[in-house]
Length: 190
Image 1 (cartoon, one colour):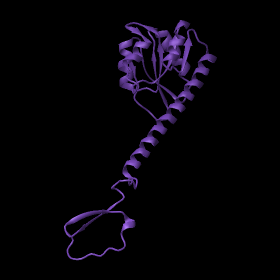
Image 2 (image 1 turned 180 degrees about the horizontal axis):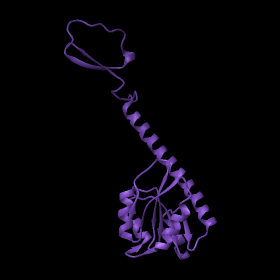
Image 3 (image 1 turned 30 degrees about the vertical axis):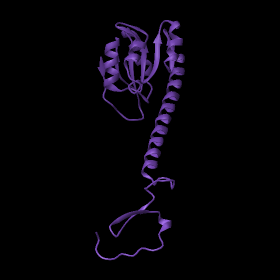
Image 4 (image 1 turned 90 degrees about the horizontal axis):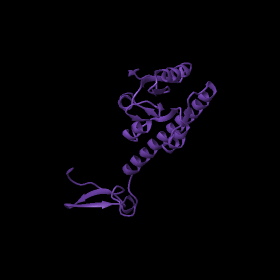
């Protein structure tokens, strides 16, 4: 297991998870020239992969299907939705393609893959990352709107936040601004 510390936000942080060192090396070599991609670690088994995903919080994982200790789908099952990065499956067996897309994988690369197929996968990966970023931004805007709505005056149909609190002769009144003709102060401030 190897880990690289976090860098800039515009860089896609990637883990390569495959039990074959040559396959991991091949993916790293294909990613080497991509300026917007940083390989932050690699793993060769399920347990190490889960630990590494949790430790490095990558944006994307290249994930082999068959590995010691289980399979790539086990890695995803053990991660919460919040922990789960985008996934590109890499496998020698095409029968896993349907299952890969059932778990919303960005792509399914069949070994051995060529440079052109890999480049097409990177195009899909970048599109998925933009979509995810837009989704995250939209969710944050929705949260902000909800917070602002909670902080704003309530509707005139029974809310108290649109009222002015007035104490008069020992009693407290909640008045709407349109119900007030004039305000006059007498005596102390209490």
